[in-house]
Image (cartoon, each protein chain N blue to C red):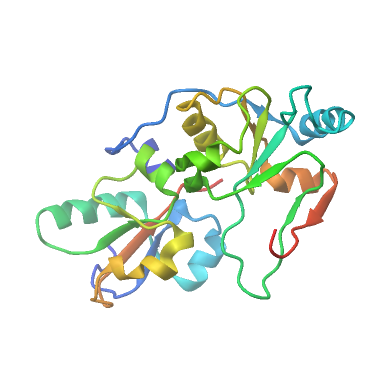
Length: 149
Length: 98
């Protein structure tokens, strides 16, 4: 798709996403913000989560397949597929008033999630630069996703 | 011009996340070759299925005209949408090199 677009060939937009430049946090910045949030149990005074991770990496893992590493934090992680954001019950798992950070493998799809959620009033959605690979490379706390999680 | 009659799945070379694997197992077509194939299909000189394997949200935001969408995570339940002719040429594409 990138090269098709760069070549100037026609693109079809059935449902264009809002024009918006997603802000990306580095792994270092996310780590610092998680540390700060965790000092308060990751809870705001109104009970909202101070920071929510939106992990879009988990697809159908075959029986016996490798369990992926996820960010180890007490802050909540919403684990869904990108297309699940089309369901209001999934979007309701996210907070609008505090940061939501999208976690993907390399950060390539974060922008789509951020711009899609913006359509529904979620304006505090950030991407993770270089995705989970960047987090792991920085040797920040990770854990294996438990079966059934 | 690569033959369009090969009954194999072709990966668009610049749109593979693991180009090394693609070259080992699949034939590839370039963006320009795909464009020319699309023109030939439009004029009825060839036939193939252009398959976008991205999430529906991404597909709907922008896609190559004339392609259909089956997210790769759903291919095992939606393969029927590819049609009954298993010899039909299928060209798949996604976002592109990272």
